[in-house]
Length: 199
Image (cartoon, rainbow, N blue to C red; front, top):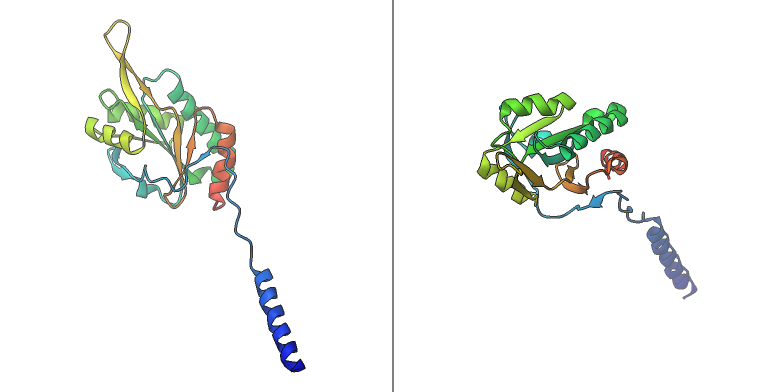
């Protein structure tokens, strides 16, 4: 009977030791920007790049992808954001090649392939401009929950476009992970490094 008690005590110790051996769950990455991992939208797009090539999000898997909506005649937010991405890529050093910046025009009426080809890659040759026709643009904006609306100028001879100024970030597997508000470049560097590290 004593032997049986010893065996039962030994078995209980083995079970307890096995439980202690298990690793605790990995803590969730502490992103500086808004973590939208798991949200069911902004899954893909089918647009044409500034070289005339058809593109989808799948083409950029293997890189962290930042998608920004804007237009070439934007006076402030769009060029500022593109310049921030230039600086971000420099700060990433050797990992800069693992970041893909995509600029989707919300003004396809004026932003022709030729105009986009002269605008977006001028900031960095690796940056890609994307466009669609009016219907495709409206669909992509809807899929990404992006607001875009023409606003006539005071003289009524032209227009500007009010649009969502934030960016979306996808990880290397093509999963939507972050929403980045305009002007959050400092925190974004940390977030991109976390994603490149597999967060």
